[in-house]
Amino acid sequence: MISFIEFDSDNIVGMHVSDKLSDEDFDAIEVLLEERMREYDQLRLYVELEGYEGMSLKSYLKDFKMGIKHWDRFEKEAVVTRKEWISKLTGIADELFSEVKAFSFDEKEEAKEWVQE
Image (cartoon, rainbow, N blue to C red; front, side, top):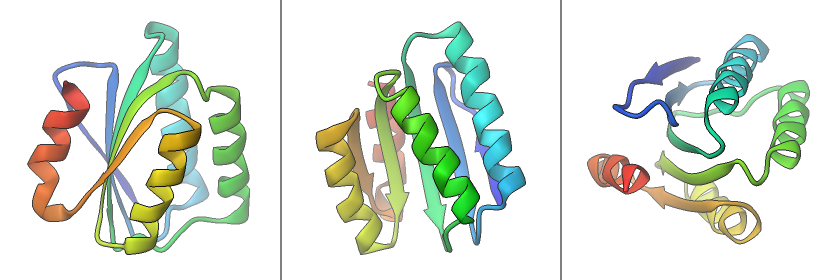
C-alpha cells in the first residue's frame, strides 16, 4: 500500500509504503516519477518503508528497468526503515547510483531535512 507525502519542493517525491506494494501501487509511483521528470532534471526521493513486505516480480522488474533507464536522474534518496537488510542495500545503491542514506523511524525528521538540503 502506498500513500504520498507532500514536500514544499516538487522535485522531492515522498512516499509511505506499508505491507506489500501492489502492481497498481508501483504503477502510480512510476506515473508520478515520469511526470516529475518532465518538469525537473533531478529528483529526490523520500521513502518510508513501514512493515514493508516486498512487491511482485513484475514490479521488481519494472523498478529495475526504471532505475537503469533513469539512474542519473535521482540526486538523493532518504530511506526510512526498521529493516536492517534494507539499510544495507542502501549502502550498495549509494555506491552505484545517487546519494542514498538509510534512517530509522526515530530519525524521520532528520531524513526529511537531509533530503531537502
